[in-house]
Image 1 (spheres, rainbow, N blue to C red):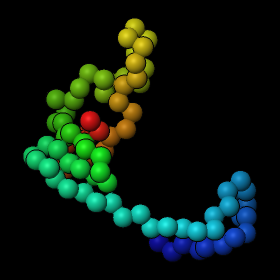
Image 2: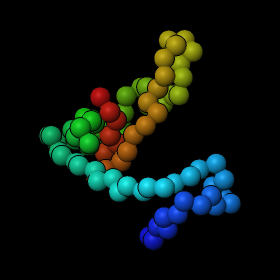
Image 3: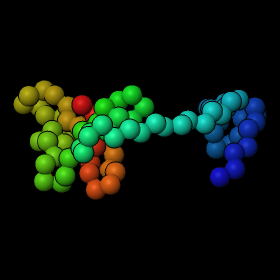
Image 4: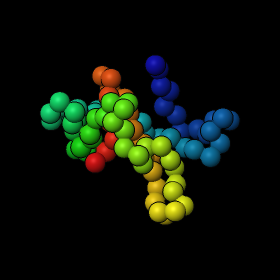
Length: 82
């Protein structure tokens, strides 16, 4: 991927002005068999059959709480922040 750094406003991005582009380096550490630490945030890994009930909804009107909205898959497990 080649990035062109410019201070001009381009047509597709009329409302965005990028003057600096920084590269982000992620640090991943395996704490135990099902726990990862990614950039200082601890994530617990679940298999498909072990996913918590809050994974299946966006908003529960009865309990008035939000479900899990962000996760990632890595080596066969679905990781959710603790």
